[in-house]
Image (tube, rainbow, N blue to C red; front, top):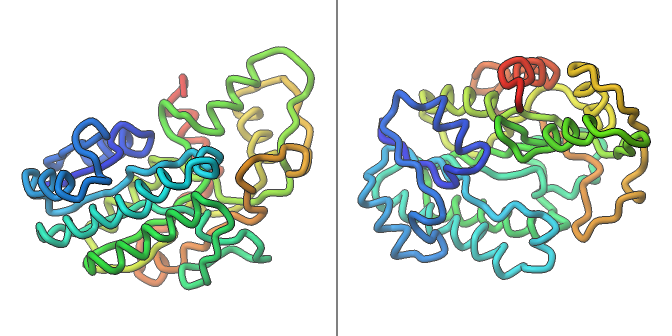
Length: 281
C-alpha cells in the first residue's frame, strides 16, 4: 500500500514509519509542503498518489495556541481541510489524528465517540474545526482521537518525569485531579495497522485501556525505573496554565469494540512494553 504520513518527524509519525515499514511510505514534514497552502497540499498528494493518508501534522503546543489562535486554526482547521480535500481528490482514504481536547472535560465518565464536543481551549476548538472540515471534504475518513501520548524519543510526559526524577531535589509535585488514559505511540500504530484492513469510516477513540491521574502515572513510571526521588500530589490550581487542562480526559474506545477490533492494551501493559523496549526513552 502507498501511504503518505504528514507530521512524519513527530513522535507518532516516527513510530508509524517503523510499524508500517513494509509499505511504500512517503514521510512528509513541514519542509516538504505547507498544508495551509491548498495548491501545495494537492500537488504533494497528487505526486505521491497514496492509497492512504495518515494526517498527524498539527500545532499541538496547547498553551501557545491560546496566544496564537490564527496559526492554530490555520494548521489544525484549514490545513486539515486542505489535506481532506486533496485526499478525496486523489482517491485516498484518510486517517486523521485528533484529541481529547475537543471535549470540555467536565463529564463524570469517559467520553464516547458520539458525545457532544465542547472544547474549552483554542487548541481544542481548532482541532474540532479540523474534524468538521475532514467530515465535509473526505467521506472516506477515520478520525482517531488519542490522548496522553508518549513514544520513543519524545517529547512526552514520560520523558519529562524520567529526566526530573534523575535529578536530586525536593519531591516533585504532580497534578492528581486530572484523569486520563496514558497511551503509547506503539499501541496507536498497531491499532492503525488493524484499522487499515477494515473498510469503515467515522470517528474512533484510540487510547490505552484503564485510567489514572498524572500523579499516579508518575508513581508508576518511577516504580518501574526504580527512581527514588519523591513525588507528591497537588491540584490543578497549583499549576495555572494559559490553556485550561481538562479534569477528565478519559476516552472510551466504544467504536473499536463495536467493529470487533483487538482491544488496546492497558496503560500499564503499554508502559511496561515501552520502558522495556526503549531503555533510553
